[in-house]
Length: 292
Image (cartoon, rainbow, N blue to C red; front, top):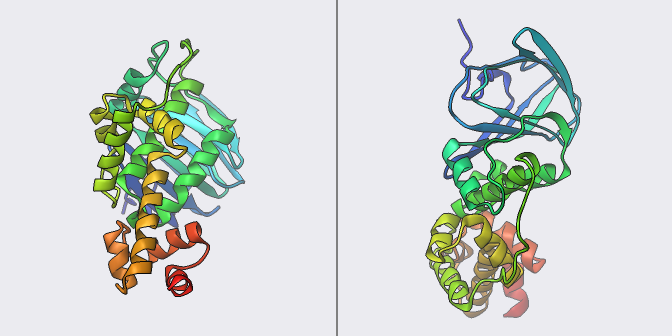
């Protein structure tokens, strides 16, 4: 009986961690296999876009088969690869595997190109085994959300996808020829419009694209301009609004913590407790007892 393969060519039952988080045109994956687990990956050529892999652990190597030749590569923590789904891919694995992967659709890639200032990039450079500290740090920020997908809002997924795609275009998409940006802060009108839209969806069920479009800006420019204006990314700013609202409800009402979590846009009480504790330095119940 043939073992089932997943969408990335992995033998599904050989993985001891297989997580996925999807946004609009992008998908994050976390795949782990023990040293004696996954031995081969193979995917036929398709028009799905690009796959970016970031090694989250040490000790992995693979032998990649090309037409008439093979290449061997070692992946230590922070090493990356970029490959196009347009190429047939076959590789034999050795050692344990732990990768965070970003799947970028053609539509998402083309939109990122259209939003970019400077020379037009037609493709990403396909690399294998290069160390990239920036991508590793971004992957490390995404990894906890794959562990708790219920806590990951579309706003956060969108924001991380745009950030990583923008970096990939600048780093692996050719030379940049841009004029210096001036006045990148949001106008007062755009700032208020963006904040109003974000406040209306405390649960984060809104995309960066929706807010950027309302401000007549590209997604990547909006994220940078919002950060330059407020000192926070849209997701960080919305999280602060949630926590501030929760502080008010904790101090002024006796509503149960679960009700406050729901009212402030948290996915559940445990999500509320984690975020509030990180921001306030103590759990919400303890904070309520300290101020009332």
